[in-house]
Image (cartoon, rainbow, N blue to C red; front, side):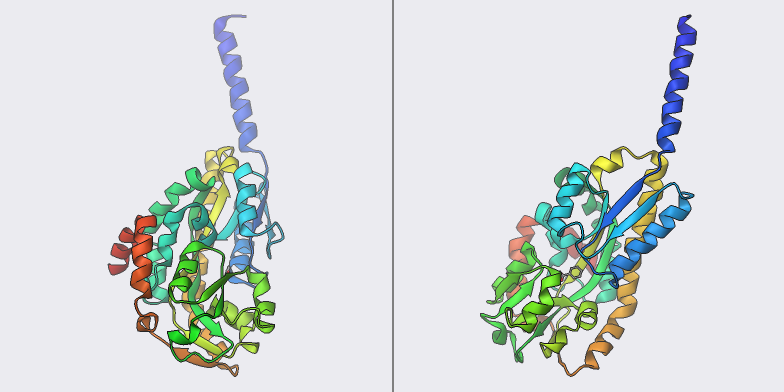
Length: 324
Ligand code: BEZ
């Protein structure tokens, strides 16, 4: 066989392989810790539906809510080995691997929910995703949100002093632990599904939570004081395993990347539109709503900033972004 013919045959074989790989159908799995009615889980369902439609049925995505695949730390580990394809995950968990992401939790970085949306949609925030492949083994495709954080307490709260020594449930991650330690409380890391019972049986005195879940998961049944503080953002990130990503065709990466970014972003709109309604719903219960401003936390915000400006270099950039 002539050299020319050999090259042509090799080329044809390579082209066939490429066509075959471009046509490989995938059954993706996406994991979340949130329960089925949660805004994130609904967005994951909408992403799955649209990916199946846009790929002409080639790709499917099975959604696993409520920690069915493990907690977020376990899911992140599975994504590093390629055992799990995708997740909508708290930035909180990612910040345990990528401390720079802790910058998002600067107290009062965002002055309200609309401001938080602008910060999350900024180029500064997007640039911070570039670290994820190297430090966490995942590709970050865009941000979502779970609103702003509040405190729900079993006992009345007159001022920050009322919280001193109190056990306050936190999501397990460092920036929030520092915040509540600086406040003189006893931060108690606890995953979401354990929170209702812990509050009901007095295992914790108060919880750090967002308004949607305070309403939907009925925390005020056992803790009658809502301290409406809006003290922190609570972003989410749409991620794909870097191992899975590298084997996808360019077309699939573009399709999955843009669809995932679109659907995680939709959660930001849901919280901007929903936050006032969530509060109205909580007000319909017998809970007392106490509105507080940044002064409530005294010097804690400044102390937090001093610690985290060293750990999270992007804090400076996010602050600049927030001023715009
Ligand atoms: C939480 O740990 O408080 C939480 C986690 C995911 C979504 C919303 C809240």
